[in-house]
Image (cartoon, rainbow, N blue to C red; front, top):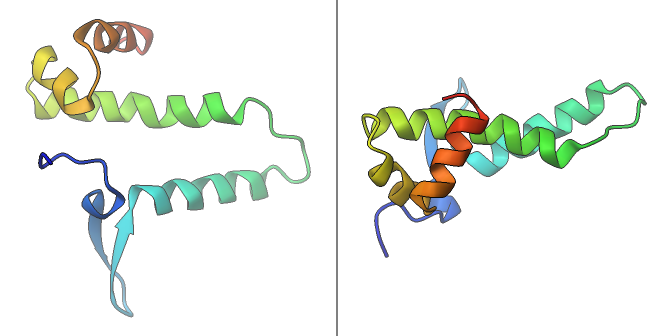
Length: 96
């Protein structure tokens, strides 16, 4: 297994709180954000939530990986587990 496994335990960062050292996963951040978004809807019906969440996550993911790979699309595609063609389409979609 390579070091960039998408296993939840490898996608954690450490956040220090006043109470304890608590690991924060990408999953828990998304869960909390979606929960807060739905609560903030104030009784209004949410629409296209899947598309909204995917775009909100995909854009910064692509931007960060491209920065991390210093703009190398082949490396970025490999890190993301997608083809270079798919990466190019996504970069164009988000004007990155």
